[in-house]
Image 1 (cartoon, rainbow, N blue to C red):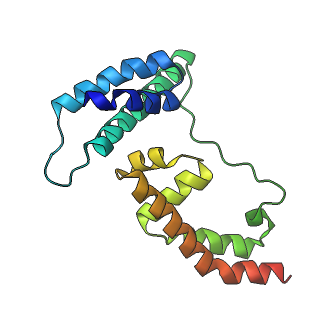
Image 2 (image 1 turned 90 degrees about the vertical axis):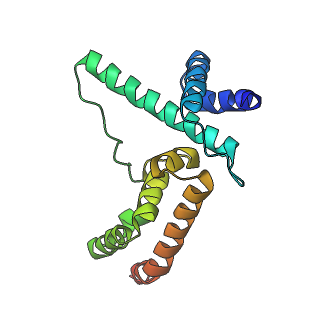
Length: 166
């Protein structure tokens, strides 16, 4: 496991506010890894498992820090802000009926695709963070985003073409 240390530390440094936090958390990752080692059967990917442990530890730390900061300030933790619509945002250019249709189609996506699309395009999360939230690999997170967007494009083609003909 020690050979993965430098790359895991770089991964944590990208996720956390300071290098010292990443260094501390790397020690916690090793402790978590030793407490519950992966099933190292044939075909298992220890590196991917360690990345998942590190990502989950970083997300846990960020959530605790956010709650602690809010508790000290005497306020509630903030939810992800509503995205501000740019003037050329296609969604904002749609009629109310068109926007309702888009919302319906997004709600009808399979749960993992719906959550992955939301996390990527509304909250602006990276694939590592999406994977941690979906309890999957980054490749699976990327596939869920891709398939969700592909399905939305196919199912909403008529909405975009009708709206552009106005």
